[in-house]
Amino acid sequence: MPDDSPVLLVQRDGPVQTLTLNRPQALNSFDGALHDALTAALKAAAADASVRCVVLTGAGRAFCAGQDLSDPAVAPDPRPGATPRDIGHLIEARYKPLAMLLHDFPVPVVAAVNGVAAGAGANLALNCDLVVAARSASFIQAFAKIGLIPDCGGTWLLPRLVGRANAMALALLGDKLPAQEAARLGLVWRVVDDAALDAEVRALAGRLAAMPSRALAETRRAFAAADHLTLAEALSREADVQRRLGMSHDYTEGVTAFFAKRAPVFTDR
Ligand code: LHQ
Image 1 (tube, rainbow, N blue to C red):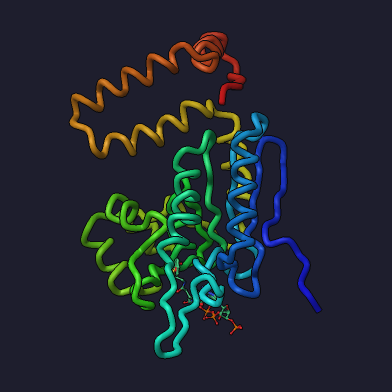
Image 2 (image 1 turned 135 degrees about the horizontal axis):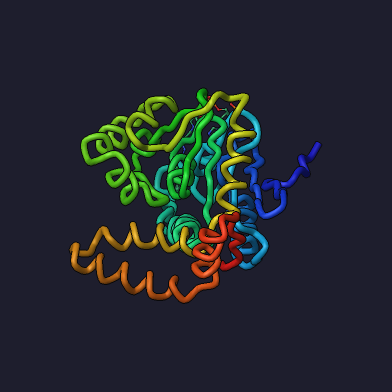
């Protein structure tokens, strides 16, 4: 019987949009349909001013097993003389735009890593602003096991998150890193009991949604930009961004609310 359940579940809870990868039979690995659905849903959320936080998670026992290796677009043809696949094209066409979309996202994105996150699935999570993992979750830089290098931003993210020594060990060995160890290395922010993941992430997303979205997105961009700036350049960039944010409604609202001893109501995006 054909499986006609959507490959991505889109659920709205007030200002929080939850996107659930839904190919549990293939551990939520990416085929073309999932790529299309996730990219479209992220673009729609980015364009919708009423969305103030996005949560990414997976259905079933996995977060995401990376690329679906059975997808004809990537599956190598073992026949002698067969033309090799150009998988670089897929990276350019799919994974790069996805990572850049997250990098430029106007509101915070939280990864709720409910289970195993492998290959590009692990790096999908690491592209998010905050990563909360269930205690039973794990992270695997599976690429070396199939003769590839970390993609979906892995080569950029891993050394920045965990330092070169840890990044090299993770990427070269491709071992399964349990969530607790991932948190100890600084790969993820927080580990919670499996049964508490949904509630913890809901509370966190609600908090983020009430915060000044534009300032949060500018913080992500400032951290990334600072990587290739001198201190003096970073300080000047801070001044530029602060100048813009200082003219925003959210800044006026934040300071006004502080002195009025009330909760601020932030609306900018
Ligand atoms: C899968 C997958 C999968 C298809 C589990 N595909 N079916 C970019 C561009 C181009 C080419 C290549 O890659 C990339 C980026 C990448 O992401 S490369 C890395 C791709 N991912 C992997 O190499 C991970 C492969 N999966 C695994 O190592 C294991 O499945 C993990 C460690 C994730 C989970 O292990 P187990 O819990 O033991 O589950 P399992 O291996 O038994 O998998 C369950 C089912 O899911 C199984 O199918 P079956 O019909 O036997 O029940 C797997 O074949 C299927 N599956 N990952 N990526």
